[in-house]
Length: 163
Image (cartoon, rainbow, N blue to C red):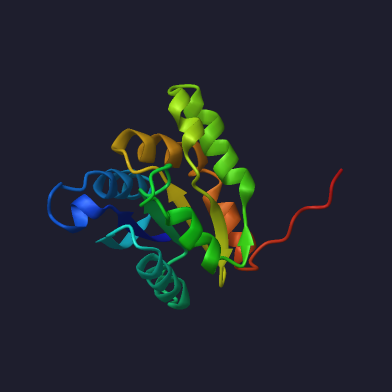
């Protein structure tokens, strides 16, 4: 069973001006697939706080994947990719590319997402869009790849030799 933590980045939700719906949507999708969601927290769009939470969560041994929602757009307060890049040891560009490629099939604005994915201390960190639909659809496009990615990142499996 894979273990996940969800970090919602939204000034409005953190200040109580808007109810977060993306975190629960991501939780529902993961739990329907048998994942254990260890935490779901909301933070404001502030790079230092995001970096600290990502570091704290990936330093612990109680999760395999950290999924963020929000802060991946073009507004001045959207800093999730920068905060993620500051803490990951390796980027996984293919996951972000796949999410965008699948997203633009339904909504051309998905091309504006700057979300990324990477690895820190054997844990995956994946940036999802902040909208419920965007978060759900992006996660659906990659969720079947995550168990294998976790196995590789944690050294439990090797790449098979090419035929």
